[in-house]
Length: 229
Length: 210
Ligand SMILES: Nc1ncnc2c1ncn2[C@@H]1O[C@H](COP(=O)(O)OP(=O)(O)OP(=O)(O)O)[C@@H](O)[C@H]1O
Ligand SMILES: [Mg+2]
Image (tube, rainbow over all chains, first blue to last red; front, side, top):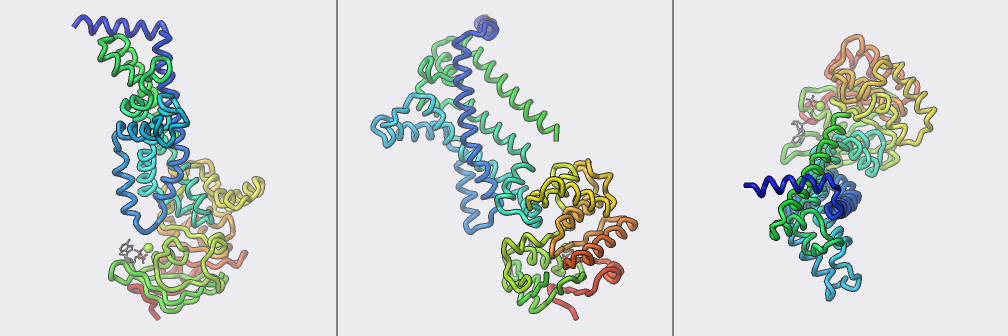
């Protein structure tokens, strides 16, 4: 049991000392997952809202496809991106494999169905009232989408945070396309997994604590934003 | 705006809920629609406003088909209106913003309509915090503020105290007189229909009753 306590003590000291390696890893995690979240959200939120309120043939089928792809396994996304970006793959000439950009691409693809599905189902259940207001007051389809995003901003923000949480806590995709290269593509989750197998508990615990603090911070931010309204 | 309704049929499954072969709503008049629950009154307004475009038959607006231009001149106040998560004032100026009316005129028109409906004291309240009756008043203000050519009202005074009913009726009539806007109002209150309507159409099981 002693080594656990010891691990915690050293972990705290790593954080308090602002250990450069720890902070490099945390920074890379935040950079990759934030970029992926912003990329996926900025395109998929308007599309999800639009599809949610639009009436069209085959909407049931589309719902089914969207909902089933929401839970796509991270390693599958990682694998697909790796095949495409690998030296012999169709986009191999871009030389992106094992770079932070590859990790952003993989996480963006991972988040696309999630953001789309969450926004789509939100707009489908609560958007029609709002789009009716816009429509009956002379607004276009575009005006309706904008109004729905504004009206449901708190719920949408919660969805964005959910997406970010999925990104920052996943290991599969970033491990495969990033390769956990020290000082280059190493992020919180890939480090924890590696340090655990090497028995380096203090570092793993320190990163684990930081990951918890990040998610706590995001959730309390959402909570206070929700209260404002 | 004049409305000509030709052979409209609306079904849910094999149940026909609306079946009107011919009906004209005269321009510049206030027409009442009455009828028992489930007789198709709201369905008719949904079709005229194109909130529901899944029906057979035709509605002509001044002789024309429904279009974006037509949509800009029609408005519809629901029985249970949805107010936006912003102040009452901002709710009321929303249709003016959609029409790119300048800020100064927005303020002028909004203040004017709030004064007429005697709801100035609600101006800074949040739309979502209003009572049912207050919401109906604000929704009427939001519809009148841009002076539509056709105003559709679904039981606009169902939650309203008698004092406020008078105010709302007065402003509906004033709107009609001042702008010659056409009004179609669903009401269960026959006295109200007599007070403000030029004509009354009665629906029963989806059909016009003569
Ligand atoms: N989504 C729906 N699915 C099936 N039936 C429906 C649907 N919407 C309305 N109906 C039916 O259509 C008929 C007409 O409804 P409508 O809302 O137009 O009645 P109404 O005259 O406005 O009644 P009320 O006075 O209660 O408001 C009713 O029999 C109702 O049950
Ligand atoms: Mg009704």
